[in-house]
Length: 165
Image (cartoon, helix red, strand yellow):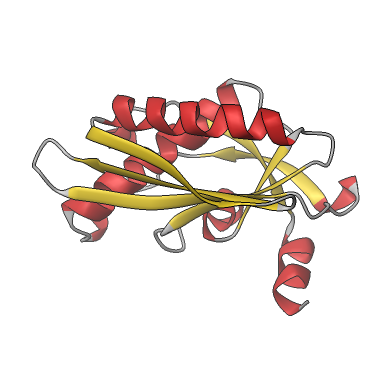
């Protein structure tokens, strides 16, 4: 069983950031975002359980996904996830825009008045061959009330290789 941030001893800000990130990834998964591959700490969650709480969400994206599609999809998905997670005063701003990498910052306020900020980055620098990519079940803490879903992640060898290069 995956524990919520609060159950692990983290504060309400970490709990809301974690909850919002889970809502966002689940939303993308439900929308059929199988052209995105989770990487970083949140991908380790899918591979090994919860090693630590992520500060941000990182994806690689297949080359055939257009820049226009990414530009249109991300702000909408971030805003929707923040609303579902219970944030108010939501602001989504693109903080990096390039041919190969884009980043958005989401800011909002929890019902308790706690400011929540995190970022998502989508890179289009190419992906390794299919044998290095796995589809994994992503378990969400029961307290978040988000159904479990499947995500694409790099397998352990590709993740380790990415850290070495």
